[in-house]
Image 1 (cartoon, rainbow, N blue to C red):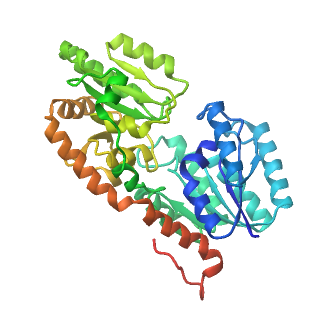
Image 2: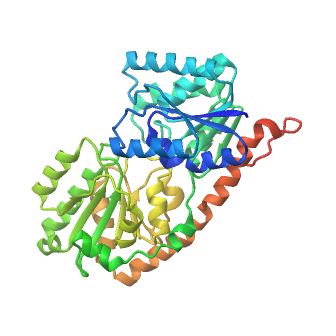
Length: 396
């Protein structure tokens, strides 16, 4: 049986973004191997990682511990990961490797080049982008441009990254696929009891629930929302009684966010890692994605499928999904007054009008259905043995 290797720095990247790919590859008759750092707990807690390992065992996926580091500064750990990956590639015969995340992607492509193995790299949002810090362009751009020479297929998940990679990089093939897509039917068929869910969360019928989903770190920029809500409450003290900001996620900024919310009088609810995000989205009044950098955010797509009106930063990926004034509002990242203005608009908007925004988002997200994404991924995987006369068999 032919073997394929999926690689990522952390297990959450496989669990959240590659289970459909694993299913596709199984249907195509491959023996599937997964390599990542199962000991890393920066995103998933230990129990969630154990559950994922158990799942891989149950579906007969081979898994390998590689001591990847998320930081390019951990030289010793990087050397160890290179040694482990090189041994794995020499031990097993892989038809091709599909890698994700910057560090695992860099090591995988270098070693695939060394061992003459075909390689796919999915860029979940380059670290260089319009408005990115100069150091990102000086460090990450030349590295990715070099690595693209040893990339058979480069998959980008937003329009900005695709145009740059297609025009400036050297991968044999560059394609645009909108992330992992969204299983629209899953959200259509959900029967969450909204009243019970809001009651469970302590939200009254007249309260407004605002929700963000994501790791508590600088990039996710939850601080900006708390500060904006603080300004709104500062002008209208009564709004503190009915505005509630929920964040589903864990991270190193937890204590700082609590301190900031206490200072500004914001009702902040940190939910930690959750298995009921769909129910939370169904119960919320407004979804907020304030990130500084994204590729194509799955939580935003899920919020749109749940008919949520949204507020998000005006950055790549987000602008592929949200239409200003129809499904929500985009705010200029770093412009707090703009965020305050957009929040005020949705908060003061009638429930009926917010529902209209949500319905628009639901219609818009249909074109990102996972069935369409899966078909394109199947074409890409098949291309390694089905290309005819050097022609592409999949479209961009």
